[in-house]
Length: 224
Image (cartoon, rainbow, N blue to C red; front, side):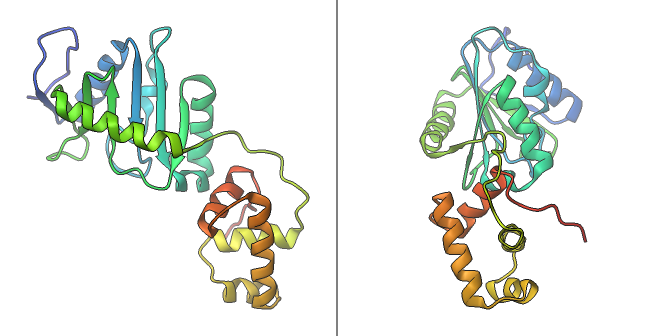
């Protein structure tokens, strides 16, 4: 069935909204009826109407409605996206990041779940089936405790220009050997510097170090 969803009307087990404007209108209407909590699993790089989170930003939620959002860790490496989400987190929602977001989904009041429509890249499917809603809610609640809060960048510590350049090179996908060649140092020096930076960050992996470094504003802006 195409068209907007009326949350106050008769509940259908599944309703598909395949036109982009109707999907956005339906999502806005459902969010406006939220009374307790909205949960969002979102990948900002996916091409579906949940991913851009515009409805969360635009819809005035009722007083007392809690909103929690989980996005992938790699979001922190994209300033144009992370800054937008940080702003959302300071005004409208609690935003955290996890290594992976397994699906794009939105759950309102543990009653209705919205997922991307299988037949349309811009459409939504609204589910009011208890088992599916519960499954998505449980998935969110398993990820949330271990996800890291997304916060505004902290002032960088006393890093040398070379250390910041190294972080930027490695975050861009350069190998130790490539980074060493570009910095004019040995591979051993690069690995020692990485170990020192990881220790300061409390990171268990290089990827985690890159995410934390981006979150703290340690990376240089590179062009070309």
